[in-house]
Every structure is written in C-alpha cells, then in structure tokens.
Image 1 (cartoon, rainbow, N blue to C red):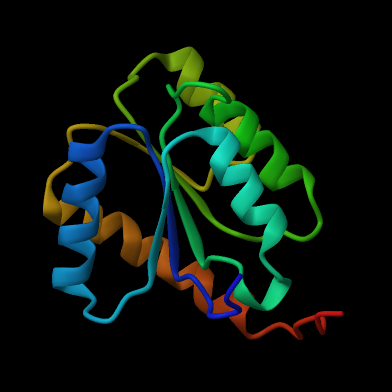
Image 2: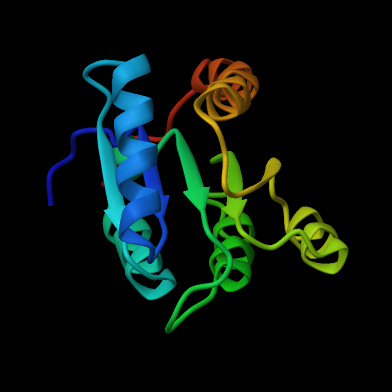
Length: 144
C-alpha cells in the first residue's frame, strides 16, 4: 500500500453522495487526495493497513452502512491510539437526537445531516481544518 498521505477518507455506501463530496472538495481544494471506503469494514481495513504517516487528516463518515455501521467505525477509530486524533465528521441522513448524541459520545468532531450544500460542507471542513493544524504540529511517531 502506498505511503502517500490520504487527506480525506470518505466512508459512505451511497455512490451519489460520494461523488458529490469528492467533486465539491476537489473543486474547493484542488489536488486533494481522497480515498473512498464503501462500507465500515472496508474503512477499518484501510485504516489498519496504512502506516501512521499515511493516515487521513479527516474522515467523513456515514452512519447507516452495510457490514459494519458508522458507529462501530467511529468507536474503533477513537478507541485506537494510532487513529484517535483523526477528526471525524459524521455526514448522515439521520437527524435522530439519539444518533447525534451517540456519535458525539463516541468521539465525533462534527455531525452534519444530509443532504448538505456545498457552503455547509466547506464551512464544516474549515472548522475541522483548524483542528488539523493543531494535530499536524505534534511530533509524529516513526513508522517501523
């Protein structure tokens, strides 16, 4: 697997949503490296296989997916020392208060209900970007 740093990992089983996110992000941030996982199991494998130096700067995560849902992905990301500092933006169609509370209790950094407009996506990514700058200035562990 390549050690090139993935800027954003999108975890979503809805192809149209993924295309919208990728198009909007690349239009605003040309040259952005994006990786897509179509379900939670694929996301967990991608994160496990990447060296620390190649981990994504942020994860855009849907909650309702086949195989492994977004809550389990979030629990694993925030429960693993290697990945816990990666900001996770939940992008989901669920506006249920119980889902919002659960996502934040598991460590989500932001929660956005789809459908989302380009301006809202850009604003959310800007807020998370401030977090990126803080975590990117800490010493990085060397890969084995």
